[in-house]
Image (cartoon, rainbow, N blue to C red):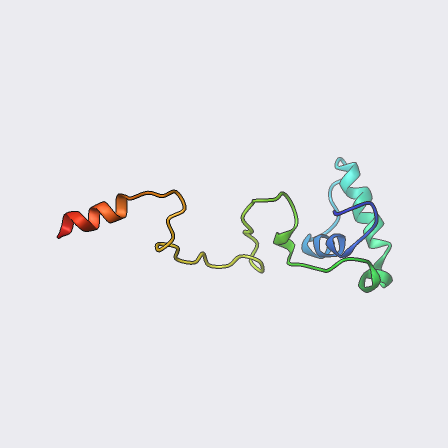
Length: 93
Protein backbone atom coordinates (compact mmCIF):
# COMPACT_ATOMS: atom_id res chain seq x y z
CA UNK A 1 0.00 0.00 0.00
CA UNK A 2 2.81 2.40 0.85
CA UNK A 3 6.27 2.03 -0.63
CA UNK A 4 7.85 -1.03 -2.17
CA UNK A 5 8.05 -3.39 0.80
CA UNK A 6 5.28 -4.90 2.95
CA UNK A 7 4.39 -2.53 5.78
CA UNK A 8 1.84 -1.90 8.51
CA UNK A 9 -0.31 -0.19 5.85
CA UNK A 10 -0.54 -3.51 4.02
CA UNK A 11 -1.42 -5.28 7.28
CA UNK A 12 -4.21 -2.77 8.03
CA UNK A 13 -5.77 -3.17 4.57
CA UNK A 14 -5.31 -6.96 4.62
CA UNK A 15 -7.13 -7.19 7.96
CA UNK A 16 -9.84 -4.85 6.69
CA UNK A 17 -10.96 -7.04 3.80
CA UNK A 18 -13.13 -10.10 4.21
CA UNK A 19 -11.16 -12.51 2.05
CA UNK A 20 -9.18 -12.92 -1.14
CA UNK A 21 -10.22 -10.89 -4.16
CA UNK A 22 -11.65 -12.71 -7.20
CA UNK A 23 -9.17 -14.30 -9.62
CA UNK A 24 -9.95 -11.77 -12.37
CA UNK A 25 -8.32 -9.10 -10.17
CA UNK A 26 -4.95 -10.76 -10.58
CA UNK A 27 -2.81 -7.94 -9.16
CA UNK A 28 -4.99 -7.60 -6.07
CA UNK A 29 -4.94 -11.38 -5.60
CA UNK A 30 -1.14 -11.41 -5.93
CA UNK A 31 -0.87 -8.65 -3.30
CA UNK A 32 -3.28 -10.54 -0.99
CA UNK A 33 -1.29 -13.77 -1.24
CA UNK A 34 1.99 -11.91 -0.75
CA UNK A 35 0.82 -10.20 2.45
CA UNK A 36 -0.79 -13.44 3.65
CA UNK A 37 2.67 -15.06 3.44
CA UNK A 38 3.85 -12.63 6.16
CA UNK A 39 1.34 -13.98 8.70
CA UNK A 40 3.97 -14.61 11.40
CA UNK A 41 5.96 -11.43 10.70
CA UNK A 42 3.05 -8.95 10.60
CA UNK A 43 4.00 -7.21 13.84
CA UNK A 44 7.61 -6.72 12.72
CA UNK A 45 6.83 -5.07 9.39
CA UNK A 46 7.94 -1.42 9.15
CA UNK A 47 5.67 1.55 9.56
CA UNK A 48 2.96 2.65 11.95
CA UNK A 49 -0.39 0.95 11.70
CA UNK A 50 -3.22 3.46 11.33
CA UNK A 51 -6.97 3.09 11.02
CA UNK A 52 -8.01 1.55 7.71
CA UNK A 53 -9.68 4.74 6.50
CA UNK A 54 -6.44 6.72 6.85
CA UNK A 55 -4.95 4.99 3.82
CA UNK A 56 -5.77 5.91 0.25
CA UNK A 57 -5.99 9.16 -1.68
CA UNK A 58 -5.14 12.39 0.14
CA UNK A 59 -7.89 14.87 0.95
CA UNK A 60 -10.63 12.22 0.98
CA UNK A 61 -12.87 11.97 4.03
CA UNK A 62 -12.52 8.81 6.11
CA UNK A 63 -15.88 7.03 6.02
CA UNK A 64 -14.86 3.76 7.64
CA UNK A 65 -16.58 2.95 10.92
CA UNK A 66 -13.38 2.89 12.96
CA UNK A 67 -11.85 6.01 11.44
CA UNK A 68 -14.86 8.24 10.95
CA UNK A 69 -15.39 11.04 13.43
CA UNK A 70 -18.18 13.51 13.90
CA UNK A 71 -17.49 16.75 12.12
CA UNK A 72 -16.93 19.63 14.49
CA UNK A 73 -19.11 22.71 14.39
CA UNK A 74 -17.05 25.34 12.60
CA UNK A 75 -19.66 28.10 12.50
CA UNK A 76 -17.28 30.54 14.17
CA UNK A 77 -14.59 30.13 11.50
CA UNK A 78 -15.05 31.98 8.25
CA UNK A 79 -12.51 30.56 5.80
CA UNK A 80 -13.68 32.55 2.80
CA UNK A 81 -14.00 36.00 4.32
CA UNK A 82 -17.74 36.08 3.79
CA UNK A 83 -19.60 38.84 5.55
CA UNK A 84 -23.00 37.26 4.92
CA UNK A 85 -23.51 36.18 8.54
CA UNK A 86 -22.45 39.57 9.89
CA UNK A 87 -24.80 41.36 7.50
CA UNK A 88 -27.73 39.15 8.49
CA UNK A 89 -27.05 39.79 12.17
CA UNK A 90 -26.93 43.54 11.52
CA UNK A 91 -30.22 43.35 9.62
CA UNK A 92 -31.90 41.82 12.67
CA UNK A 93 -31.09 44.90 14.80
